[in-house]
Image (tube, rainbow, N blue to C red):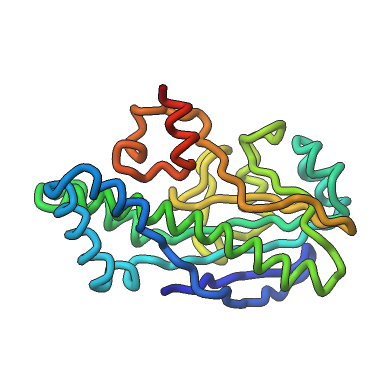
Length: 248
């Protein structure tokens, strides 16, 4: 299993500290259940992928990294006027960007272009998304323990560009403030997307009063329903009951 390499610092600090998280777990049990229900033919495709994944693919291709930048309230108010929830909620905020790196995305693309490994490549891409979600959960715990607790602060809110009232076109600011291109080669495409594609960001408001902050299962925006390739491959991240209600 892999650990997340975490680059963390406070706004204005020149030195960036490097830490490691606990090991992240890429749980493929939901995929196994999905393909088992489809029958033996589809299970053979899944077993072929698992052989590739456990046979060295995971270790070679996963490169989990994250940037955690602590921003004071005055910088949040100045740089992120488009995010009123963040400004109002906490005394400071953690800007968090995480990625699984370029290698898995590149390999999945190569495999889906090869007739003999299309399904393995597609499932590799799904596994990358599962890894990204697992990183999110691990990073919240790491920030609570290593950033919040020593300062007597709690996570009192979590916000994502493009969800709620927080505008999506903030990525260039995110990349610049987090120095993500220099530290882990994560860049902004235009103003709304991060590259590599398997990269995400969030803002965690930090304050004196603990609020409800757990790993949120937010649907994609927009959700393409049954047309979504991840749904068709068994890789939708939303709970089964949500999927059933949404796709009736």
